[in-house]
Length: 315
Image 1 (cartoon, helix red, strand yellow):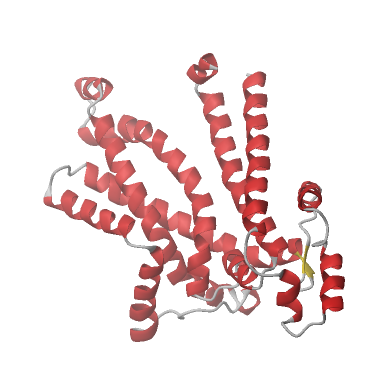
Image 2: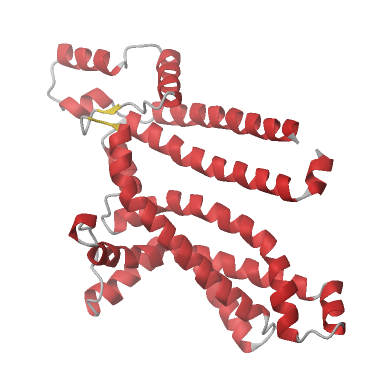
């Protein structure tokens, strides 16, 4: 058991190091000079040279990569030249928007996806089942920013129920803050809810045809009791995997939604940093998001390893 855990942790660290190299390389090949973007096109050559030296851009690329990784490991994400603040401070300020948005979207996606998936599975091949699966196919195919624009048009412009964008801050009260997150939450969660609904339906239908379901009915359980006590519990195993991964995807997918609704979260910060060629901000935040996704995957693997002895025997 200990060897398998150590192997998976080692694989996680190796993959994270490889991800850091890919991210650093991708940012390095971006067009544009960070020093030039900060000082402007009229800056003097000696001023540009001084700023490049201050930013470390005159050092070899391998040295810059090693310094960035070493700082990241120590918790120093660097300093943003655009905002003149540490990246850690910027991340902490934006997480108060991105984390509630991601958690609310996850709750909405799980609640909607589970309800629709179970409802469709119990009415397999009916008109309702076909209609729901058709809607989920649309939810998967249509980009979430299109949903965002439709929601703004209907509920913000026409009905004027929710604000079209912006974030007043938690200091203005929880109701005002959460009201500004309602439309982004729905737009972000709809594709994930559609995916989850299809997975729940398929998993539950497969479970309903297992031998132990017929045995449960033969022992005197009603159809509803057999579903509640046996089918749902076993059908949730693959669903839990998807639910664990969806939080990471919601954090990453918020980049577009936060820009559509002008929310001051991590996604909008990354977009602005790319525009301003603030490379340290881009690299550090992207690596944080990638590391979060990989850490969730690692946690799921370790949980499965702990609860399923078959996996331990296979390793």
